[in-house]
Image (cartoon, rainbow, N blue to C red; front, side):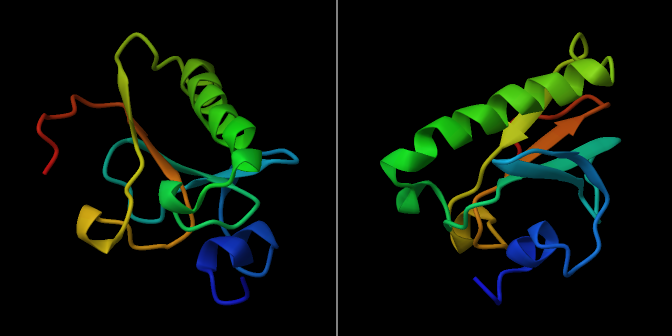
Length: 114
């Protein structure tokens, strides 16, 4: 998708601080962090949200969650707890229509979130 900001980041057309990349996904630092650790994990294949997933995306989304745990462990934050958030649609707070998971950690997170 040529107009998708995350597709442009994945393609290297827009700079971002990448903390992880493999054949299936990219993880970047959020430019407006809401916690000491705020990463965005996104598949390289574009789809808007879970409503647009195809069966071929099942393994990729599972991979996003596994890598999220890996990134938290690497930063020694797993004992403190962390949050994974995936919004679907504008009314849910999704501002970029490319599926992504927010990984938040490094401080006490309140519930309910909003």
